[in-house]
Amino acid sequence: MTEVTSATQSSPSLVNSRTGLADNFEMFLTLLTEQMKNQDPLNPLDSTQFVNQLVDFSSVEQQIAQNQNLESLLILQSAAAQANSVGYIGRVAMADTPMAYMENGSANWEYILPDDAESVTLVIKQGERVVARSTGEVTAGSHEFEWDGKSETGTDLEEGVYTLDVIATNADGESIPAEIRASGRVTGVDMSGSEVIVQMGNISVPLSSILAVREAGSEAVDDII
Image (tube, rainbow, N blue to C red; front, side):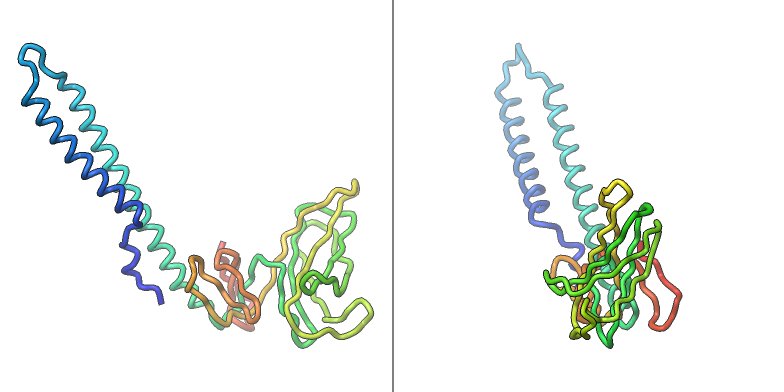
């Protein structure tokens, strides 16, 4: 499990920025001291320029500090999301994904139309191969679609991951984009990469695509978004 203490570690770029600023500031003070030692008493150096440069150094230092604080907050937020995602295991999650696992002769999706359509065709694929088609609801809003796991010829297909495409057009023949969602029981969480991956049986989706979770066998839903 990711340790929260790692959130306090700065990125190499920020460390290099602070180190470079410190080196430049030390060099600036050295040059300033030498210039003041060797300045012409009858034509002294303009102190306003030195003050302005000191202000510039201070502004850069504050900006680097702000970036470091922001980076720390983002890392802590990511660590909190990882910790919370473990609580999804055993619950049913709804994800923004066109993939669903068909088992026991059934796979379920939800699709959302922003506007009424003239026609809606639901296309089920296994990989790039079309295995079945169905006619969908044409009214705007959310619609549930349960596929019986049969091909267009009525043959029972093998269990596995299938993808739903929603082809919706309006009266002018223009395409209407549809949101597609699928639900599944969360069986694991992978935190080894840069983004948390939630495993819904044989389907893996990024944590950012999880829209809601609920207890198995319950209609109560906890919205994530």
